[in-house]
Image 1 (cartoon, rainbow, N blue to C red):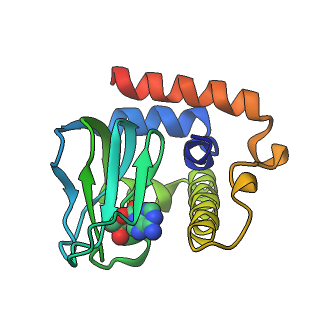
Image 2: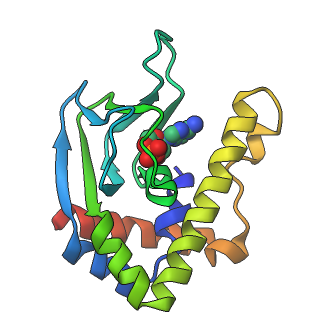
Length: 173
Ligand SMILES: Nc1ncnc2c1ncn2[C@@H]1O[C@@H]2COP(=O)(O)O[C@H]2[C@H]1O
């Protein structure tokens, strides 16, 4: 759950208000695909509720990862401008917030504060995901995976309650 704070927790309230005004909510039923391996995507997604699985679709039964509330999806395509190498499928009925790449790029090019917050938020999020992958490979220390530097979060409790407010605002949008 705390992984979710790495992205949204770094944005300020103006960024969040802007996101709410500029995106849209989408609902996914069980088994519905958010992202199809190989197909370019033109949006960034934030999971509001539910559960999605990242899968290779190469015959492997096992999912690569399970994603939940607050997590960002599609950020790799966003950063690299490449088609996704995996698919993302709803495991449970899910609500996802979608914001178009074009709209994010426009704000990035006109608002330096947003740009700094946004890339820092993505860097923290991706760093934490890599830590989790290291743990999954049998290395690392899983119990430390969710430990967060309080400097980064400006107090875990504060970040947690802020995250709740953010999700609430997105859910009402
Ligand atoms: N190993 C992984 N762990 C968690 N999420 C992943 C992993 N690999 C890919 N994803 C997510 O799945 C998405 C597929 O589309 P993207 O490549 O744009 O962005 C990817 C990430 O958001």
